[in-house]
Length: 310
Image (cartoon, rainbow, N blue to C red):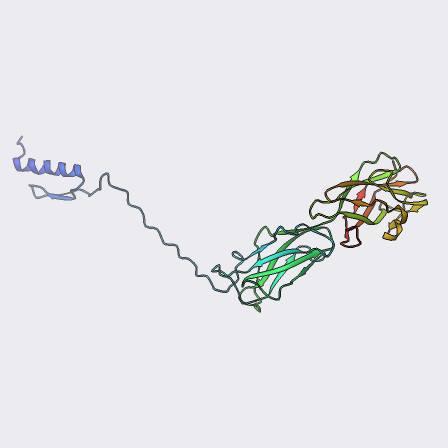
């Protein structure tokens, strides 16, 4: 067998060496054949694929944005008394899609989740500080209101409106003295434990009271309210000879001489006991008790949510 010529051996050695470096992609041999080797970058950095740039949508100036606009309720006067007098402030900030203040004075409407029992007063004559609208809300009914704002999208007269905030609307809480059924040690008595909230701070006086029997049919025969105490059982605030049938309604003038102590101080609780002329154990109920409270001087009247006693 013939051996390779020196020139052939040199070419082959060169090809092998260059292949090891990953540099050769084509060489001619001594016999006239073209030898191809693919070029492969060896141990080099991996190329990063190109990314498609994100194209931002152009914002529309003066177009109201539910995302950038906001509704807020400052903590001052929240909660408020449900006396139809004390006001909760609600602030609406109106911004456009470019997050710029909208200052064209377009109308903004504030909506309460309890429109039937909540009054919204727009006190300011127009927006203040360009994009800030101020509303005041009052209510004569205990409960929590959620607030949302509605505004024309592009102008005051635009029929297309937006509502904001999109989620978790702020709330305003309207409160009064609250009651819950309690256990009476007197077999003739029904007891309710009343609590005067610490906030807002105000002593409250019982001025109205109604006791109803709300069971099916008519009240049990000969069942009469004999007396009512507030706090200790010795503090009798209402009593009438022979008792009173149900329903019983007591107005401010009816307390007369028994109005010695009908006050519950702020942050405190007191039991109210309604004593009948006979045992109510086993007597079917329930009974409903409704109470009204003033500020001890005849103003700021609020009504507690009715309490049903089994």
